[in-house]
Length: 313
Image (cartoon, rainbow, N blue to C red; front, side):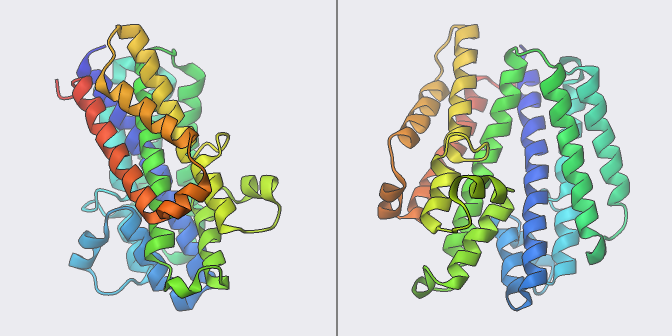
């Protein structure tokens, strides 16, 4: 496969994943802002921090009012992390790799872009937010369904999965870090009602409340929630699940191309580290420090993949 095509597939699906992740994050923030108005500005600020958009927002806006943050994250073309911007980037990459996609995947992607462009053509009122976010998630599911149902499991599919799981792992780690470490008012409140609410917000951000309760019942334990989102191998947004999928897909590429790139070894090391660590060890090391290290390693791995497979041609 041409390196330009591999890179286009990789980034197309990173942007698609980012689009859905940001919609999930906005949904969680909107719900929390409705129920806890006293902390709503802190919640909106945490969303901007998670997406790396805080500096851009503060340069153009005063305060963290719901309407301003919602429209900045949904439709601002000057915000590269907005839903509109990420969907456009995904569609632009899809056009570049059109011949590597089935008709169904291209049509689902193009339809999603046109639908969201129309949906977000004017400012979104707060009472419209739930319906708008539902459409965004549905469009994302449409592209994912077409991809899983029609594409060959060849090298192109492996680059698609690499982009998806690298982005997903980064998102889960950032949500865990920002929501818990940065947003928690003080260390004295660890274990308190507000601490438990922060962890509940984390579950909501990754749409994992029901799955968590299937395994743990109604009890919201910070240790159990962290274990679920970091080390549970059946949770599709956990760090270990994403890391194992990345290692698997790089392994398939290694087998197909007959080359053991540095990224393959790095991915295996990352997955193995998560297999051999416990949640108690993570908390003893420091959750923030662990997540900060994971985000750094994940970013380096993404850069190494781009280098190994010469995405820039």
